[in-house]
Length: 294
Length: 345
Image 1 (tube, rainbow over the protein chains, first blue to last red):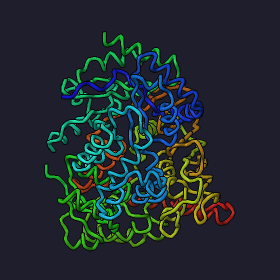
Image 2: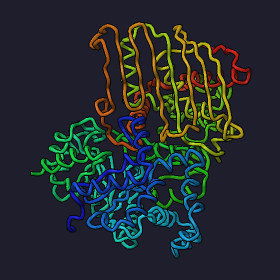
Image 3: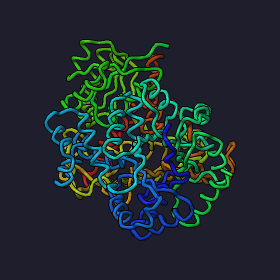
């Protein structure tokens, strides 16, 4: 087992990109507020002050500017990691609606700058000439991750919109490729987001693959906890699992004190990711995490 | 229990989702895919050697060995593929919308009347927690007689001309109305009963051949009136955002993907007067496997169950045809400067 590379608190990113699973309207309002990058950076500093060891960032188009600002901010970078969540799934879904699945994937290359394509070097040539679909996946991962260069990126999470499809259809080679690409190219560990924790553990065990760092919903309301709370809780009692808990507040449905008292019960939960849009939110939530751990 | 052997025809975004579900659920497994794209075929052959990959539906049907099939090809080919499956005796789930227009579905309906099989049209919105709950409220008749219904669907999908089959009406049947808003029309029928008159208006803003905005007025058989406002070129809507509001003699109902809000003048059954709000976390019911949303799992489980029992489902081809007739009615009215069009009920 590797050393724990997960900070106990990671700031979530949904507020930056207008994702709000309880209210699309509220999501859109927050996206408007955080379209000013200064508001994003201020929130990151406040989160760090109050104990966050990093921020989750999907490869949303607006993440490019956020990464750029973090790179310039030496103070913030110290003991503060970025946890990419890739890809920004909605981008591909909307794009696939527009031009179809295959072209949504390949357009990432045609739209990438020449520099980025050249940066892929041999991988890009292999992709073009060997026409092996796995080469395409490898190059996509590298292109998606290019915005995080020079940042501390200990774990890269694969979005559950992709990973749950791959788990269910049973595609071990893609996960193996993902793992090797991350280790070799970025020195990062494989993270997998899922709404199906037992399925993930079953599949990886059956495939004989090392369990990844798992990003999954942990809340007493059972929101996005499949196939049921009992099956997930049984796994969360295993201390060999490395879980970053998301959806802990069940989209604002649960109070922080109650929510983090629940996550603190499980040895597998090494870290929690918490979305917050103001200092007040951060203080209330982060304090609840710390109190629950006492 | 023996696993049902499933085939997926058309391996785009939804084909992948259905294939993944069929493979992951305990009651079924994926045995075949029909797909014409060489790249996708290569991926399938490389990653899933146990799955047979065909270029054409007739190859699949000649070989046989499937208990159910999902049709997830572009809309224009749904009916002919569906007809072939019915003739071959394979129960089928056809992705929505059913067809380019109601007339195109005639041979499919004829085949089904010759040989009935379990069949479904993929209006998965009926399986969303909030809309399912709204349906249970309507079944309890909490609003009393419904008088007015307002509905909308917005998404920021298209701010410049799109590419691909969705923007070619010969393959897709039309624009934002038939693609995303056939879901809304299906929900309106399901929640409030059939519609007998429509009046429509459509407009193109960024697309050349299909409508980007659609507006429609409805008269329901019940006497209620209502309207729909829809656009896929609406800024600030990250995902498809559907909203339905109904006014009845005893109160109001608001439903979105996020929540259900009910206001009642007087208590009905276990529902109290005043405001009540249910949000997704409290309505959420877990599923065996979630890939792309629990609504898809519930839909597939319903379909698998229907195939096992040889029984019908609510959202079947006949129901899909009713929704298609509404779509046709709105388009027809729009071409006639909004003149009312009677829907066959």
